[in-house]
Image (cartoon, rainbow, N blue to C red):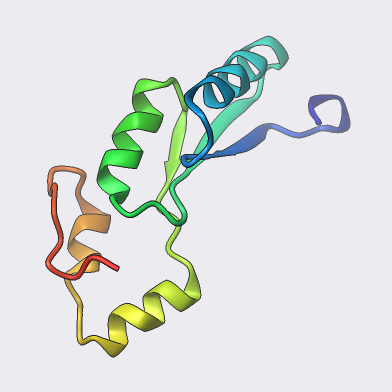
Length: 95
């Protein structure tokens, strides 16, 4: 990917810790930034912290369309608050 001109690569937060570590190492070897994506994680804050601890350069708070729609259908607006701040450890409207 780097040889084709890529500057960033994505690894999913739900991947095994070793996989994330190898992606971070490969990113360093090839001069790529690593973006950790927490799509589908039940605790997005914990997943973001894990990705950061494992060496990802960026964390993508990825909330899929269906997940957002389901939260809105429940009348939940609190998801915006934990999206904006890693300091929140729980949301009253967890999916």
